[in-house]
Image 1 (spheres, rainbow, N blue to C red):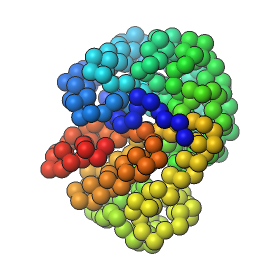
Image 2 (cartoon, rainbow, N blue to C red; image 1 turned 90 degrees about the vertical axis):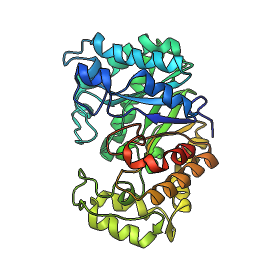
Image 3 (cartoon, rainbow, N blue to C red; image 1 turned 30 degrees about the horizontal axis):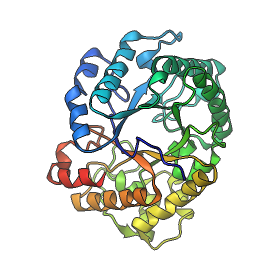
Image 4 (cartoon, rainbow, N blue to C red; image 1 turned 45 degrees about the vertical axis):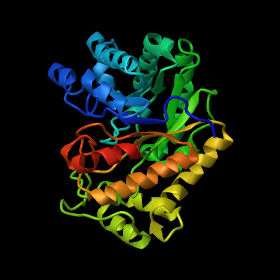
Length: 340
């Protein structure tokens, strides 16, 4: 399997230019150059920068220079502090992953705007292909749009290539970038396409007590590692039915390092067969977990990343219930950073 050179270990800047109230005050204060400098000192090599369509484009498709200025600023800071950047379109016109909206996949106008936006991104940032990469869209939800999504990918990459012929382009599969659905992506358009996935399994552990998960009790807790059958039972009790399917494909008695390795195996095989690199754009643990369990999970997943040669970026730098610089992780912060 190919290596995603320059993007071995990174961190997300979630909540700054996406999943936020877009305002001057927020954009100016949530992340500063001091944060970028701090990340660089941890020994990471890149950041993943989620941004929303509405930040840089209006409903009629015209571009918003003020929005681009924040991306420009981050790119400049990262260059100064020797960090590469993945520019991740987290939400686009007609699609919001956390609301499972799908108008984007049914509306040609929205798709044309999407392609136009990436052409503009290529014009502006394509020349910095050695330190910038593009991620076309975050977490396509519905498995039924897999073919449509592959078609949109096949139209978007050539548009980018007119201005950025060698920039790395990341594409993820359906079911929220599930590692089990990497195989549903078409063969890479060219040698500079990277397959990406997200990993929060077992979700019953990493999202325990999450207020946004239907049926999840606010006081529910569990530990890691855990018994496989206990994990399945708790998943069936507290998570939507689609999450049960994940465990049908994995044969193990314990949810531990062997479970994670088994979960990655198919994506690793597909990436190797298609001669492309593999990147985990998000992984992390909610700030409700016990600290020993969190360390166990981070230790296991990163050892599997290293064994397979998978590049990755932890979710997330601050806030959003997963912030590794927040108070919850302060007692184990130094140890945690070493595990990334």
